[in-house]
Length: 119
Image (cartoon, rainbow, N blue to C red; front, side, top):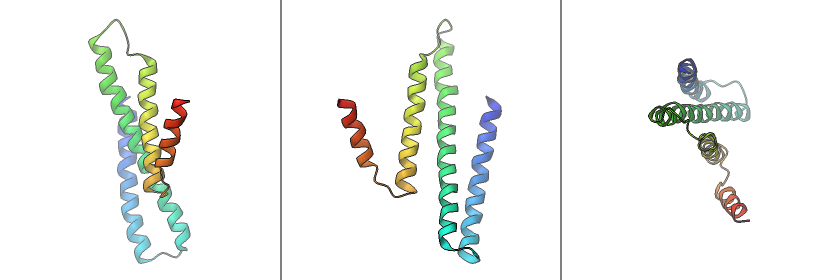
């Protein structure tokens, strides 16, 4: 698990460096149409958001759930609870991607999911 954490951290740092250099290159000398550079920028922002979600999920699974399991040696944390926490983390990350990168209003999605929960 330690290798995954270090690999993901390295990927996140690399994406930040690429994004920083990408913004400098695009603003100064871009031979491509702005539409293509916008697509590439959206892909990089999405990769950064997903990587942050992965790191957060990895942190919660390794630190919080493993500490709970370490306190109670006989039982592991409930698998459904661990999976639900991962689901909600990525649900929030996908909502952040939709709102911040693609400018899609997420209030309708959250309202529809709340109404679906009542039914």
